[in-house]
Amino acid sequence: MPTKVEMEKIVSLCRRRGFIFPSSEIYGGLSSCWDYGPLGVELKRNIKQAWWRAVVQERDDMVGLDTSILMHPQTWAASGHLEEFADPLVECKSCHLRWRSDDLEGNNCPACGGELTESRLFNLMFKTSMGPIEEEANIVYLRPETAQGIFVNFQNVLNTTRKRLPFGIAQIGKAFRNEITTGNFIFRSREFEQMEIEFFVKPETDKKWFNYWLEERRDWYVKLGIKKESLRLRQHTKKELAHYARECYDIDYLFPMGWAELEGIANRGDFDLVQHAKYSGKSLNYLDEETKEHIIPYIIEPSAGVDRSALAFICDAYDEEPDKEEIRVLLHLHPTLAPIKVAVLPLSRREKLVTVAKKIYADLRRQWMVQYDDAQSIGRRYRRQDEIGTPLCVTIDFQSLEDEQVTIRERDSMNQIRVPINELKNTLQAKLRGERFDTQPLWTTKG
Ligand code: GAP
Image (cartoon, rainbow, N blue to C red; front, side, top):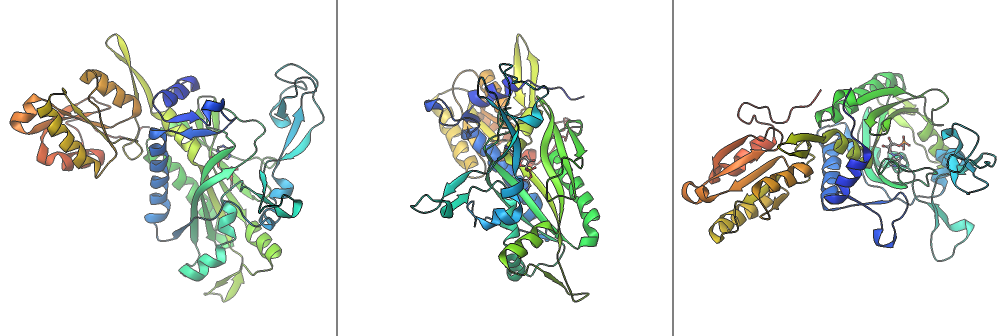
């Protein structure tokens, strides 16, 4: 079994080093909303970029979209969200805390033991109004998933790209859910980001593509460093299935609080295109050029969360190692995801060293996110970089002034090599791509 790290350690590291802060903290925070700090924003950007690269850039059967968060209200009638997107809610008659009744084990309030109200359905969509007059007719919703923006653009994409089945559309964007119970840090929040694929296929090929995407998506996490044994596939029971799904599997990750959903992969059948055609009155058919028949494609949907992925990547990368009298905390983040790729560390603040170090820093920054750090001992500086997952440190010492060479030190093995300054960039590039460092493999996919 993989070692589990306590959530408090992750929250503390994220806060201390500027990955994630509570939202609007100076006002006491806003429940279940989070702000990504200077390192968190880089991690998130890297996750999204890696996903986009894997599912759009490197494939010829996928295209991307970026649709608006506010959509025509009929969208949510057609999608079933107005009717179905609700959780059963109970309220404590004494302390007035609210709970999801399907989360509760007993019949009383878990906080104070008080009596609970009857369960009623609570819609999770955030409402707002469009235009200057707040009235029922102007109600719009903050989208609870990015998927609907894709479905309503199906014909636009078909007409403008001439894609043929099977093909997919990808989108990354914010989604909002007025969750009844939140918690576990960024695992369940009310504002979050999704990375969704809607893959359109001929109906008779749905099983094949469903299995294909299950494998493909699980492998993506593993290639980026998540241990195989920290992941599992879990099939939804009939009772759990969303109203639109024929079949669904979760890719679960072993989070500090236990196994929980990281990504869902659903076979949505023709539900969405049929519904939107019905509500909009527009044809969302596809002409199969081989058979000359109009068909409604089936949709396979791998739907991932950026925030949950960030949490899983951080938890899986977290490690503590004995280090003389102390403990070395490090994040074994894959270089593709590491917020900072290289740190430039002059051994002292002497002018001659600083001049060389600053020149190297300026040059490397054109290619990567690089940090310059000249505060405290070199050992401390290495530890600071280890803790934020920086794969490589470049140290400039007095010898560098004589031989025009610098030291590259690798995070995981702590191995060091010395390279000429004029070969530094190429060497860093090769190391970040995974070239072996002495005899030690650099970035192995664990598990
Ligand atoms: N379009 C399908 C859909 O939205 P979902 O299982 O409800 O499916 C997909 O959500 C993914 O979005 C989840 O696997 C999770 O990663 C992320 N997600 C959902 N609700 C979330 C929340 N409240 N906070 C953070 N991430 C969430």
